[in-house]
Length: 328
Image (cartoon, rainbow, N blue to C red; front, side, top):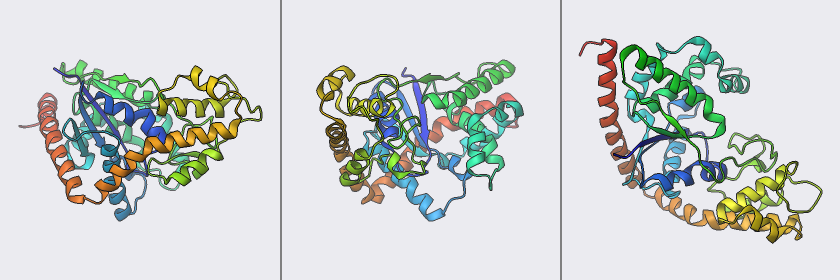
């Protein structure tokens, strides 16, 4: 029996090159080996005020990006979180088995509270429990995560272990699945920070649906240093980041890339990285445009995915309801 993987992404904007190289590209390689559930976690995004029409369009766009990046809807379960009510139902039950102190220690709550000081709502505080529910609802064995999400996975594990200790084996205790190459792509404007679509400086991130000219301009302006020697070592954050990107999209080793570009100057190197990224994203962008122009096909995919997800979720939720003593 295949092990099950669960992961999701908020429809809070375009998918970045960092998302693709750090997560989605890796997901596509897992679909033959694992039973994969990939979810657009639209309920999580409601902790920030949304324009309804734009929000809906971003969610559909993200689904199209998922598929364009190589996630086969016949091999993976692709769906919207809000289309499976079990996420919200299990979240409430798990809230009752999560301690206030655990949530107060979550670093992302502190960060987001500072960014959205005018809207520090209860959902923002408890959303790690919904994240745990997302994972545990499907008894996922593995969760592909980045280093910055370890704390959330640990909370999910703690909740599962606590529940199992009280009621007997109910939830699979999930493990993290960490990608090897391109795991952490940094901002082009500040290579000490992770590449993010929420970066206030639009030059800091590459959207996978950016036009080629826009991509090239961003790489030309990428922050480096004054040495003009392409080497991978401590203190050269900008060049290290560009080398990681180049190697992730071309399959070249760091050593070979350094030998290729060491003495050619930063200008030539930046152009080569930009061109490699443009060529990598070209077929993805073509597929994305096809999907966005065929809304009926998109709807068919997410409805089929939600139906498959509900079958698993409802069965597991019935077990939980029975364990906690709710009337059948």
